[in-house]
Length: 104
Image (cartoon, rainbow, N blue to C red):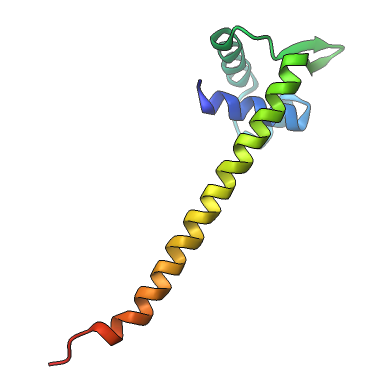
């Protein structure tokens, strides 16, 4: 599964609008639409359906949106952990460096 396309879908689901998603992501609407159609074909699941002048999530799209939200929340937690861990390691090494530096 293409996570980039899933992120595009997640943004559409979050904003409820392809135009707003396009503006947020700085990607053209046709490019987003093409990626979503490719994702739907890859998954063999319709995620979006026409609704008036816009789009709506299908039942499967609603479920996929919830799963994508959880996935990207975990991704954000991992990024935060890695940042905190690398910062903590840097702080420890900065503190230990003068102690461990050999004096000549």
